[in-house]
Image (tube, rainbow, N blue to C red):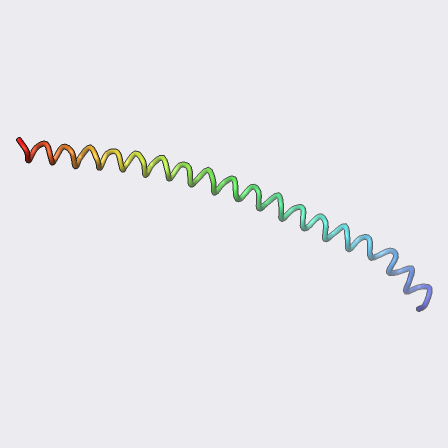
Length: 69
């Protein structure tokens, strides 16, 4: 192999590895952030569904009480 090709590879290879590392790290951070956002949204939905469920239960009980009187 020619010396200039070896020199070129010695210069470019570390830059390529650093670029890959930075891209992987950025993807990991974005993924963690997205997971946290989704987890927060799911918790909000869960609370709202529980609230609606309680209201429906109360309403059904009201109807059952009304019909029984």
